[in-house]
Figure 1 (spheres, rainbow, N blue to C red):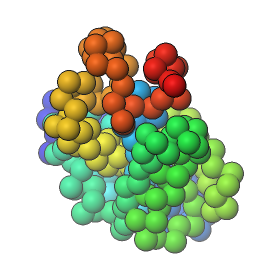
Figure 2: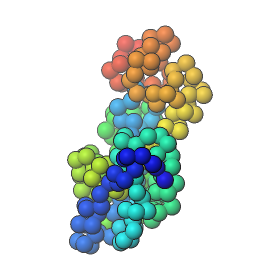
Figure 3: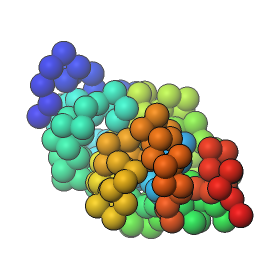
Figure 4: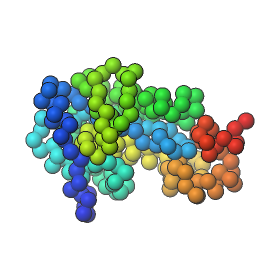
Length: 215
């Protein structure tokens, strides 16, 4: 269980309860991480929580927007999320798929893969801002959804923990880029490594900082 002054800043269930009362009993929250990085995959999490449980907020206390949590807090809570959830999934799209499809279609591909892994037929989806009109399941797009919806926040934590671990594994293969530290984001250290070594096979060549290396 996370400790500290932010430990009780759990994301709300107000949207989930609203739609539960309207008949949506299998609500899947979806969120993505790594959309703006220069390297590595974009990842998405999908989580279906037991909204009817009166103790759900207590069971998942501290779960909120993954960006507001420390790595230790996310790691401490991710297995709890998976245990409490009715179903969950993680999907990703590689840097090559991002370059081929574009970042928005690749993000939706990762979301679809997360849904497929969850193996739940949802009544509706709760998304963090990104509309998904190609998906015919009823959906609710919530601005700052990872702050306002516990389902979306839980999905963001699962996706973030998965992607961070994936980037630490890539760091072993490409240690010169320090992926384990910046996770592929555009930091000064990452830029310095690009200047010295050029891009790796898992860099996103269609992103502007990589354009000068394109053939």
